[in-house]
Structure formats: structure tokens, C-alpha cells
Image 1 (cartoon, one colour):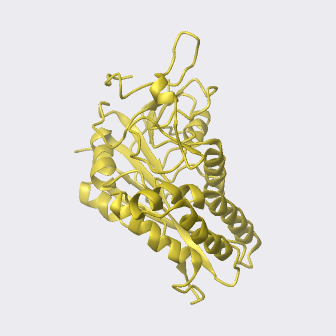
Image 2: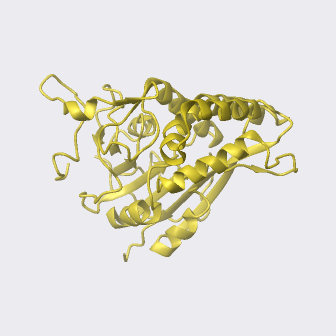
Image 3: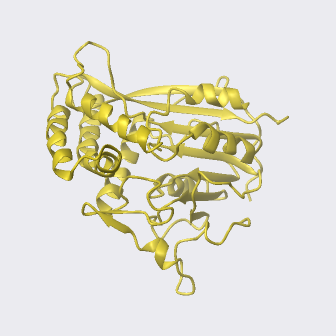
Length: 334
């Protein structure tokens, strides 16, 4: 068994890149013939030709089908490449591993699975509204169907709590996630969030308000506000963590090009991969949000998306997303 991690700050750190729960709130995916998932959890809703989670139906507006899951896994690999192959910024290592890790909104579970491989003596827990994780995972990795916006029933013993790309997951990330993460970390434990706001930036003036993706962002933000879902978390997280009481809070911001416009070969390749996952994902992110919140028909949505997709192919606009990687430590005295 790995020893408890020693407490560290990030000063001089090289930046490279089963407790009781309500039965209806915690359901582990089937690992043998002797266990099964509730049919209501595992039978997904179908709308617009896509599938959506059934547990707490409607609280997350985006699909959970193979199309979206494959896109999300490719997104994971792009982010990992952007972070120079690192899974996290928090100062854990094979010599100083975490003992117990919680991955909130784990999605397909790739991060949790790779953490389980990297730290085989750690216990890794991943939670999500959808039981879409694989059946065959490292023995130290466990997935549960949970709604992270509700009360957490874990004891405060986690060494590391993590979120990544949680657009639209919550109405109040600071209260629902950051504060609860602080409360459920052991003293000296770390929280890390890897988030990409929906908004885009540009450094040379080539981005205008008429750019298709920029217009889509305005519509998406409007629909998300009506649905009471945050889609721009990232730049505020460092401040929120400091206000809650985290110390040694560090932020790294990484630019991810929207397509292959950069001259630098690595960034060009990164941008081309990012363009592909945006093209694959924009319909799924739009359908329920624009239909339910903005009362747009599927036909109206598809007309809008024609111009959005064209804009993603336009290399004369030098736009990029920002990846915010923010981590901080719970004080020993907390």
C-alpha cells in the first residue's frame, strides 16, 4: 500500500506538461453476472437521433452516445498532448502518489483509467450521470452513477479531486464543486480543474463579431443562461479557489488553435485535431440547448450550423481556445 503523500507546495516544481451513499444515487456499472444496473439508469433517452442520460434526466443537455463519446476521447488525447503528456499539474508522482482520488464528471473515464495505471496502489473513483465507462478497467478504478451537484456523502479523505471540461455540468461550480471538493479533501490534499471556456480569443485582430463560431457562442451562452448552466468556467477558478481557502493555487493557461492556422508544426497539428472535434461536437452541443432554451427548430439550428462549420475551416481567422489548468492545496490547519 502506498504511503500517504507528503505535503508539498508547487514552489520550484517543474511544470511540464466505499462509503455509504443513497442506493438511488450510487450505482456501479456491471462487473459480473451477479450485479446489474437499474434498467432506468441504463436505458438512455432518445431525441434528435441522439441519446442522453436518464439519471437526473435533462440536467445535462448534451449527448452520451458513441458519436459524442468518441469525440470526447479524442478531445482527451488532444488536451493530454497540449499538457505535454501530463495527466495533472498537482505535485504527485510515482515516488509521491496520491492514495485516494476522485474524478468528478468522469465521462468515458479515460483520465481515471490512466490515473489508475499510473498510480496502481491508489484508489481511483470516477462519477458521472451516465454509465458509459468501459467494463474492463484497472482493479483500483471504480465508476459510479452520481449527481455531483447534490450532497456528497464521502468522508473528507481524498488526496486529489479533479474535474476536466465540465461545460454545462453545473449551475454554480464554485458552490457545488469547488467548496465541496475543499470540504472532502484531507488536510494537505489537492484539487485540480482543467477547463476550457466556450469563448474564443485572438491576438492579431483577425477575429470579428461576424465569425460563425463567435455568433454560435453568443447563441450558446444565451441558451445556457436560460437553462441555468455555466459554460465559461476557467478564468474565475483561481480566484474562487483562493476565496474558498485553498493555498498554493497555481494556474497555467494553454492556447489551443481552432484549426491548422499556426505556422508552428506542433500547434498546426494540434489545431487540426481540435478543429475535427469541434466539427464533430457542435451539433450535439446545440440541439437541446437551442431547441429547449431558445425555441429553435432543428431546421433552424442546422441552418445556423452550416455557417459555424464553414468558419471552423477558415484559416484566415487566427482564433484559439484557452485551456485553464488550476490546482491548489487544502491547508493542513483547515
